[in-house]
Image (cartoon, rainbow, N blue to C red; front, top):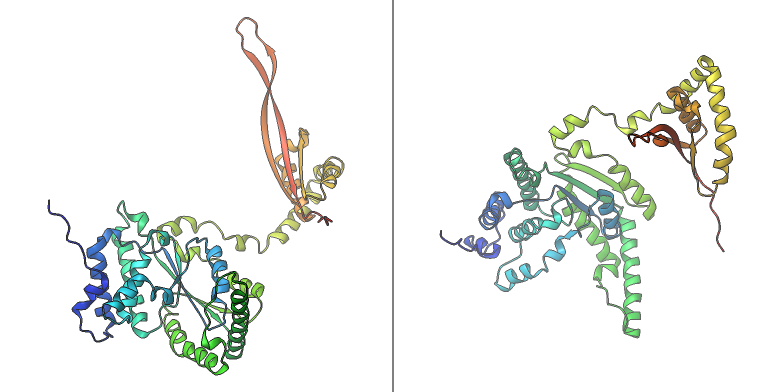
Amino acid sequence: MSSPVPTPPASTAAAKFSDLEIKDAQLIFDSVWEGLEAEFGLQNLRFPKEIILLGGAPGAGKGTNTSFILKTRGLTCPPIVVSSLLDSPEARRIKDAGYMVGDREVVGILFRRLLQPEYRDGCILDGFPRTTVQVECLKLLADRMEALWREFTSTPFSIHFRQPTIHIMVLFVDENTSVQRQLKRGHEIRAHNEEVRRTGMGELLEERATDYDENLARRRYRVFKEQTWDALQSLRTLFHYHFVDAQGPVEQVEYNILTELQYQSSLELDPRTHDQVRRLPLAGEIVVHARQEMVKRLDAYAFEHAGLFQKVVTFIEKKMMPIIKRHAISGLALVNTEDPLLDDPLALAMLIDIFSERGYHAVVDLHRIEVPEKVDLTTGQIACRVKKVFRLQVRFQGSEIRRG
């Protein structure tokens, strides 16, 4: 069996083109894809299940909010920042070899990074796409990821090729806010670096000329609007698009992000999975009229089962509330009872609804415990009776204690 022929790096593969910058997206994509497939094999081209394209004007808070977005989506990998990729060892090798780091090289380096195992479940991509060519290459990648999903969906590799999801999230601030935040950041970085130089402690932070000059800060904002903004807008009809108002304080921006990402799984699930779970109602759907339905039930209990309803109210008042009140600080009371009243399923339903109406959350578990009663000395068999114990858990808003 012959040994595999090593595949040249992306920069060498790209050298079959002229040294001039190629602007044909299809040519660029095909060249990069051919190199990846030759090096890794088609079954190993496992791109992230979810890609979040994070865009934002200078000062919009991408760095501030990235960790929150990662947490919201359940991702633990660091974001992929394209500007950092352009200073990576791979990019430096391309530059040292005399080539430009243009669209072709950016796409090649980025696609290779997306194949790393840590990004399998998803990643945030900061700073891509920025050009028309990069937009087209992203579309081609999305098409190819869909094709891989379809090709491997009925094979042992299917778990590695789930239906891909691409989000566009744009954090937006107006020009004046952007400029103010850039200049504020520059002031804070300069003060920090002066302190580091004075004390010799800490690390120097990068100082950008745009963070100190208002005209340059405005120019940087306008470049964003002309390039990145237009690139992301051109994709809004193809992928999940989230426009987030980032003008306010951090807490408000986080709320806006949560609102945008509140429920996406029905759009992200494999269609076969979605077909199975779609019969179950969304939580938001069942709570819309939940209180009105509970009120109807309580009135029905009182009018149609008055005797039993009164017994349940009395049971809660006399036997449970004294225990619950003793746990007013923690907001959690656990009550065990063998009262035969709760043998009636309707009584249990009444108890839960009464607590809900009063602002509590009650859960009831039934435990059956075998209690030995007598032993047959001839056979050694033990006769047991079954004791039913109802364990009630009542939660509510506890009282905060100020600790000195």
